[in-house]
Image (cartoon, rainbow, N blue to C red; front, side, top):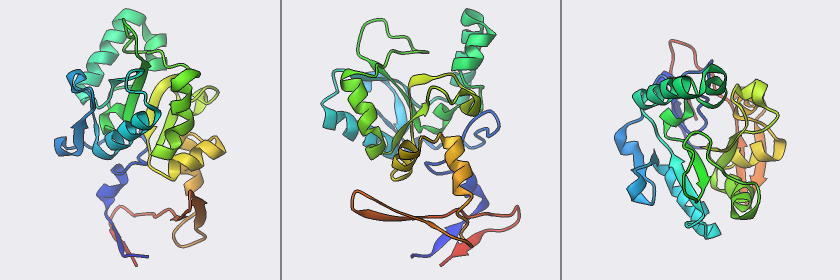
Length: 228
């Protein structure tokens, strides 16, 4: 294994970062880490690796005409505006169910994307993304490209967001495949990883003829760590 160096700042970085009401996003993604999704006229930004894999998945399925990204990266100000406007238009119960609290939105990481079925009058808050047809095929292949359906039905008490069949999160492969196989949310997966400390047993798995070793590294408030 190659030498790995970890710093305290790494806790709030990476594709597996957990963002929710109890884990606010405290960083600011750099503009050079983002890229425009096609079609470029929509001006939707996504983290570069996430954008690459999403484009590859849609191209593989031949879904460019049927699958439309409607929301990607958002600044804190944009999330505040969406939250405020939803409160005025839909009320508190709806907003708390479908709109993340500003500062606690995955969209601020550039790793989350809302996808819609291509049609007129798209709903920006709750776009239609069916479970059948090419949209269902996207779901079946999403994990191969590092994506998970972030807010599945039946997990609302864990994610604290209502079921959102349109919201996908890039976590990277093989984590996406392991979450899908085990039916775990990102919150549950984070908890599971803590059973595989670097100093203890590691998790070994093989996916599509590739071998992976997964372990969890802890950092104190004062130290960086180098693992060789």
